[in-house]
Length: 610
Image 1 (spheres, one colour):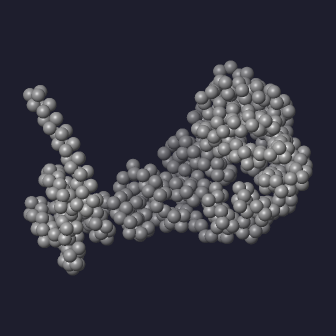
Image 2: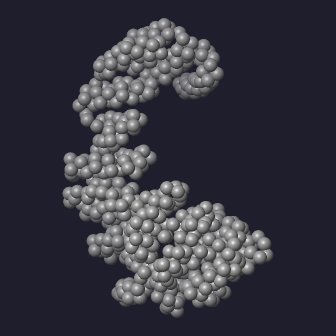
Image 3: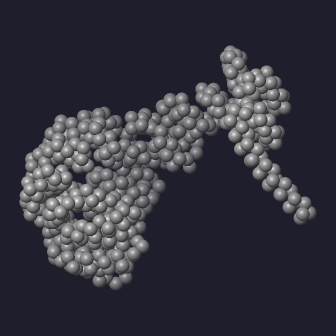
């Protein structure tokens, strides 16, 4: 018995291998137009495959006969197959294909109509006929097949996924969207797959139709959670985070979640500079979750950090705003102390003190307390060391800075944080004018698993290579790097003076646009908006092909929109970006900002049922 079973398994294995080889050989014959040889092999393969209701090889066999113009034989073989399998109406599609090739178009249409008319109320038969039409690119007939199948089975939406695909192929986007929504209702587990399909298929303009139809489904099926979830996803795709947040909070309340959904959305909004929505989400978690919940402390840290970004991102903050935020940090720390649980929030306060309030001694003291904590997470401690190194560098204590960077590099050689430490040490060498060593480090870091580090390392490596060739260039690069160090140290007036002198001396140097861009950013930071405007315009007009051009245009547009209150000029800059700099990372947001400034209609969504 044991040997018989072994022989049977061996026989099946050899049979499968032989069939696979014959299939490849038949395909090769077909590609080489040796249709007789291919037809013979396909027919033999069909004799084996038909036992499993697989007619792939039969259809290929018929294609060979058609290529040989053996139309009568093809019809005869199809009729024979239909006699053997009278319930398989997909053969009528094959017959119709033959009739079309013979020029008998009316007969072909009759075959297709008969196949759909005779369709039994069985899922396998409906699917087989639908696939047969799809294989012949008969999308309208395939659509009719699945729609009739749903009627026969009295199961609306059963084939909605297939219908959505067919409507997409037919170019009927509204119908495609409708069927995907029916498909989601029939099988909510498909939501991620459907999101991916929609993301790949829809244009930005199509989301209006998707939004409209989703509202209808929410109203028709008010007790579901997947349509509101899809609605939130749509708003995220449109970067309308406030409406997405409304849906996320409603879902969190309805299902008594722990705030994770809201937290993730708040992070997305914050990364896209929608600070008000992000803060709203974090504050919702703080109000709805207890202190010991998984996201409470992180929501508090993120809320404070986002408030700082909101205040400072356009450089038009006041000392009073900074002090008000500082007080909120200090109140929290007074209540909860400096300990491993609050270490990240204390680090954020140190950043506020060092970079914005210009109190480096206080920032250094806070970070030294964190580093000295017992039981602190190694990564939090290492990050504190990196930040402390930055603040020592800002204070002019270069040796202390490189010592801290090197400690982290040595302790986390294979880790991202170690790569970050290496990058900061390389940047320090760049500031000091040791360009050759710095470039070697940047070249190594170009392969970093951190996209941010890799991109920054690549940019600096190329920057050094492009601008450091002749002896005369070394002075310009050294002066430029020193100006960047002054900016790092928050010595903005000294940096502006150095860059202005540098630009006058090297008026024809390859660094000219970089000097102008850095000066513009500094003037903007100092709220000298007219001066910044002139510098950005000079870059856009005189250096349109350089790498800084789209950055300058985007910053100029934001300047017109937020500080100079000239929406017409802002729109002109945004429009120029998405029309002339289509590959720019700012193109999508520029189009969005242009439409918002133009006042494009954006309907308010209906309230979700609680």
